[in-house]
Image 1 (cartoon, one colour):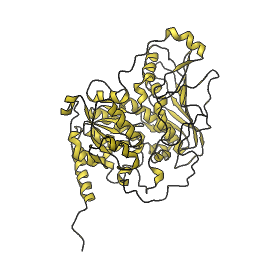
Image 2 (image 1 turned 90 degrees about the horizontal axis):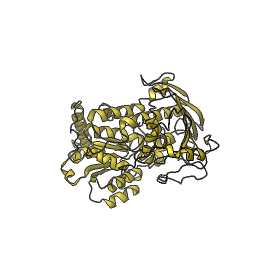
Image 3 (image 1 turned 135 degrees about the vertical axis):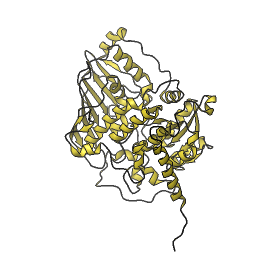
Image 4 (image 1 turned 120 degrees about the vertical axis):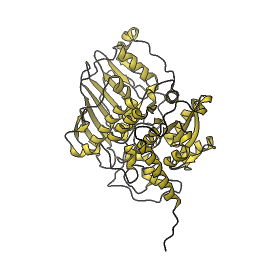
Length: 474
């Protein structure tokens, strides 16, 4: 005889479905209209819920706290209690804890003003979409989403729900951002036709050889694996997918390009108005695999003329031995002292640190990543130009403070989804070129790949699992 009892997990799932149906039924109006001020703001702080409190997510928690503007009202992590979450839990022992972001919004929605999303790349989308649909401001780690379509929907949601939405490429609030803006406005950087961008450090998948997906292993007691997967395809748990190792897999990560591109050529993309490319070519892929990222990649992104700006080719190099061609007078590399250490291993000092070379009219520039400023090369030319360079304003706020001030209506996000979205979509096209090992022709108006049916289908990403498709309709 069957029991009439309904499990707690089934009840929770039914409640989540009912909750999301209410959100969807609200149509163009969010369930909770975005509010710049709540009662808690009498103290000048923003009520923040943090999704992801270990690894990079934990760094975001600490950075938000350091601003003095964050009041934490909820923590959420699918592996709550695991070693990498312990530091934050001990530092903030009284903040309510959740393993499922849907339950967090169910129970705490009225208390939340803003949400940080410091989780694996592929799961940014559902959390950010639900938060925005509820009128919550969103700080989302880079890259914004895992597919071209996800990023498109996130840009639309930012506009539809009128929220502050900031992507976490923190150099966009540091000296590099303000210098690039000032130098382009003054005509110091002009008529750029070529950019070389590179990240040649060791990556998790270097040396890996796989013939397919990983074998099933027992799920740790601390981990909610079903919620960890969010909108991704069904996978059996394996430790090789979690805690940063997800970066190695096309199903979960975005490779070296998605991880570092937003720190290296983000300001060039914005202030040179690159938009979307018309062609992305996989010039070189070493160790191609349909499952994990190549051991080395050279990708050429070709952008058309924009107004009076000429066509531009940006070439990306990754892989420890796939070093970029550099000018003879390049000199020493530009390194940002604030570059965070890798989550596994150490930075390889035997290769060129991550950076870029920008070839403009009459001038060539070298730069690093994150907030590192550009330098004119050769050095003699830099000295000659010194008196002609415009002053560079100091940043009024770091990236996390800028976001919280934007929540309060006191500043605007410097890397809003409207700006970060096309950058992330450009990188998503690069990942597709790596995945199908081909040269892709792209129509930026129709937003379609015109010469490769399989790649064009992948613009939408994989079909979401049951009960996760609704996030595409928020």
